[in-house]
Figure 1 (cartoon, helix red, strand yellow):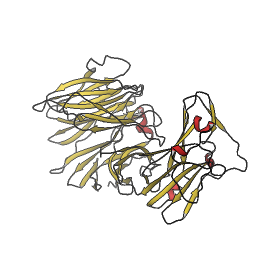
Figure 2 (cartoon, helix red, strand yellow):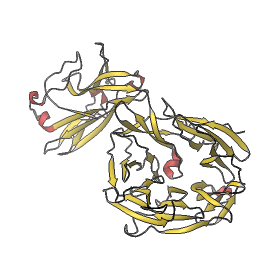
Figure 3 (cartoon, helix red, strand yellow):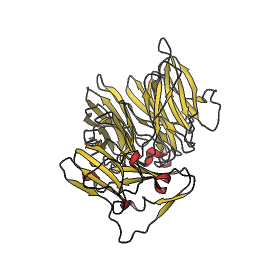
Figure 4 (cartoon, one colour):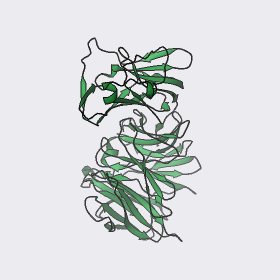
Length: 496
């Protein structure tokens, strides 16, 4: 990351060509220099088709309040000059009004103000290397805030989180975190779409630059798309990397937590509760054999960490699902071959030293083996009181079969079994209405069969082998996948 700082000075800077900021020892000390300091941050790489957003930070380094220009309301005070290395310069800035209203902001002593400025028409820039200079007050006393080389590149997604949950945040927008392979390292982005147009992504929000390739997971949340969420990934064999999603274009600070176990596995989508606490379900295998324990790593807003145990298991559970209910509690569905347990987490109650409270939700029918349980949302008009329910899927001699179960263990509705193709592997389940469930069955290394009732469709995965199923606003099944230049492509599944 390039963070270039230029102290305000009274010397006029020529703009015939982009020049580096003046050296610190040549800056003339004035009241402005001693009091206000400006920073402009330029990243090494930006995505073609996306606006270039430049964070500008004003710091009052003095011990008295000070007035500074309100760049959010007066963006024309900052100009952006491009040089492609051919001697031709192009300046871009917001058109200033006939009369500048002169709005200012008051900065308290030792305080800062952040403003995110968009380079005009930058989404139309071609793929190329550029030299970019950021200048304050270009019409009066030009002050260079940053000069550096940047690159505009096509999106190259290499990892992504295509899953869809049922928490409040997941129900309102289709949020996808994905990893762009940059010239050096990787950039983490967040893209949002709507259920009406699941393939039409909004602006790709840059979150952070990472040195290593990771598989990001976006947390569930009950606070809606504008509330607190986190991105989580495995950091080595015993660590967890995470960051808070700010959604502003400023870099989110990546953090990591080391656990006391030599090895762990992230086994379910993380969840952010109403208090902003991050909960990450992990599987800790025993030193020998197939046994282990399910724990939840909880990270508070102030960095407090706890490792709460859910339960010991003789073998790794078949599936673990998470959600945050509308009351702000995190719920976990843990599926073994013969039963399903439900655990609840509330950060405001319970000692971090005590096991998580849990109870038995469901026992497998005779001659059935449970393979999956996940949360779904049913409406009151479907013969159910409405709200969260569990979609339980089992395997028997008749095939795979799903049924809806209330979170108090009551049976709601059973669906007919579906026969699997020979050597077929169940890889995804797409809940629908109370009478509709779709199954994605892998039949080859890059091919699959989607089945929903009596309807079928043959599918092909992306180059990365990823599958992401979602229903549009009308309930029709859609497959989402990462594509070159995408980042996310959504295709309606042609079931017949």
